[in-house]
Amino acid sequence: MIRVALVLLFVVIFLIVSLPIQLVEFIIGRFNPGVKDRSSLAIVNWAFRVVLFLSGVSVTVLGEENVPRDEAVLYIGNHRSYFDVIMTYVRVPRPTGYMAKIEMLRIPSLSTWMKYLHCIFLDRSDIKAGMQSILNAIEKIRSGISICIFPEGTRNRTQDVLLDFHDGSFKIAEKTGCPIVPMSINNAAAIFEDHIPRIKKAHVVIEYGKPIYVRDLDKEQRRNLSATVREVIKANYLKNQDLV
Image 1 (cartoon, rainbow, N blue to C red):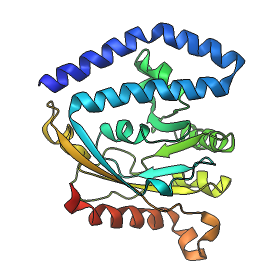
Image 2: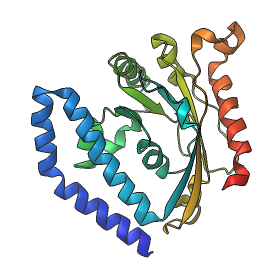
Image 3: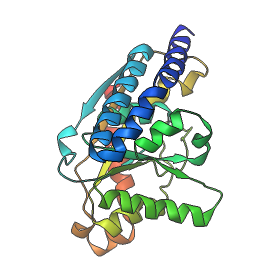
Image 4: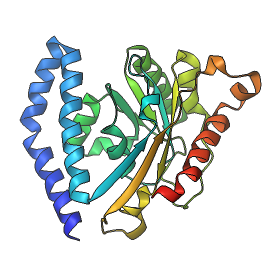
């Protein structure tokens, strides 16, 4: 429970202390949005690295050279832990927004940082709002902001099984032509979800697969794009089981 206490204490202190920093970031953004994007990324990256350190998390990263650095990408990954966002965000080479549930807007300060980081808030109960979220993500990609989505739709509570991917997420790549970067994440639930409310020391393996361009796929792969990407992630996930 000591790790939980340390993480919670740090997060609360960070969210309070960073309130004036958010004001500075807002002012910077009025004059130079690019500088604001880079500085917000650096600040939150630092905070996330502290959380990982306090949690005792070690991460082995494979295939990071597969992530394009000169264009916005659509990250697609499996999802078993709240820590998936923290562990993958500290690796992004450029401003990246995550698709998040709309309930996150209720958390003061945190929701402000998420907006600064171009996160998109999804209301799963409203189909029309869900479509608008996809359109917002398309605009982000076109403006040079990468997007990360966990298309299982929720945290998967079944070990070593991937839920079906929601097709809507892949419209972003189909409409923009951006590369899809498959992310497989092994052993993330061992940090927290497997033994709530404790945080335990854990080793996680993240692999970034080779980028997938929709234009390079055959007709059958395009028709079943979500399944195509899911199979890549599943194969890497199973391959890396012995590394954790």
